[in-house]
Image (cartoon, rainbow, N blue to C red; front, side):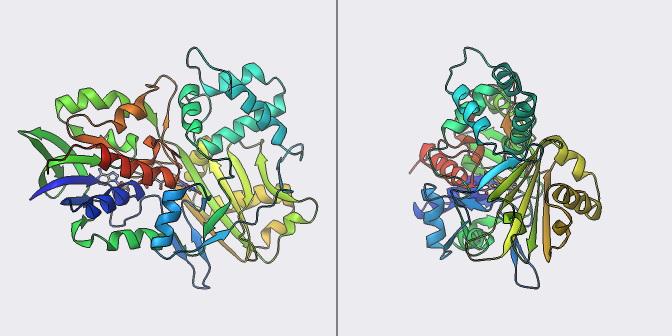
Length: 412
Ligand SMILES: Cc1cc2nc3c(=O)[nH]c(=O)nc-3n(C[C@H](O)[C@H](O)[C@H](O)COP(=O)(O)OP(=O)(O)OC[C@H]3O[C@@H](n4cnc5c(N)ncnc54)[C@H](O)[C@@H]3O)c2cc1C
């Protein structure tokens, strides 16, 4: 089969690249490893009509490309029930954690002459043990890896690309995000092939042979829209391997588990105007009020890094019991009075990796994102991790998909 471009991966990055190629009338094929499109975007609706986002859920107004796609797909946005009065506390002191994050931001403005693990950096500046525990827990959740593993320079570089003053939890979809990925796929049904995991890419004459488990495709250019840790499993011909593999291997998978409980009322506002809790006794666990304004009362727990790895090894019933016991530890017995619950485990998946996204590890190449988003020959990478704006977010996935198409030099 001869097509001009192959896109590997039908997550939001691959779907966005496909949309752009379709608009330019460039012939392409989109190959997805699994039977489902959307990658980390997935939603489930229970028999009672309540739906839950298993993966990404939150956006804000500055995420323009995502908001634009929502409006094209006819999916309205809803406001999260955030309020400027609401605070995030740690489970131990029950005090507002904001001053610790302010201290952290003050450090971020200092420039570093050489890379260190993120934990080494903040432990140099923050001496209070409880503050350190809050930061450890915070980073295990937000990065999905332990801060001792993370490159400080790469983490700073990535957070600089979050081009917004707004909270990233500000808005949600008023309908499941799965509808967005289905809308996108409806634009290029003929070009999309599911159950086609790519295993090898070989340079031939003036193009590439792309091998899936079922078929070989000959193309002029390749967009690899899969997380870097997963792309490192693909077999590349020598020049591609030499150029890209060190950058791909600079990444490490994250790990995240998300659990959302639905309650008859917001009991967590009874004592103080609470938005969330950071657990310091169990690093990587935090809980936020994920309710939409004027809608159900919901709490969502994110369990990251090592604690996610541990919880992933439990059966679902035990996992829920342990997670609800953590809620009880902070909120009391009322935490058991939920009317519905949904979990999702994003740990060591063969095609999505794990966590919100993969991260550059300490010791990896700091410029790995730059190397991967810059075409070599006619191959380029395009996952959310590599985005120039909002990396690791859905907005970043769209930006990465669009940039990859713009950067490729396609023969007319
Ligand atoms: C629990 C959770 C919560 C999150 N919350 C938010 C949030 O609130 N807001 C936000 O903006 N972002 C959030 N994110 C991050 C967001 O989901 C990602 O940034 C984004 O969806 C990544 O899209 P992607 O296309 O780069 O990668 P992916 O979604 O990982 O897609 C990669 C695709 O490539 C396919 N693939 C992999 N290997 C191959 C192969 N060899 N051959 C063919 N296909 C292959 C995979 O099957 C997959 O479909 C969250 C993520 C998770 C897991």
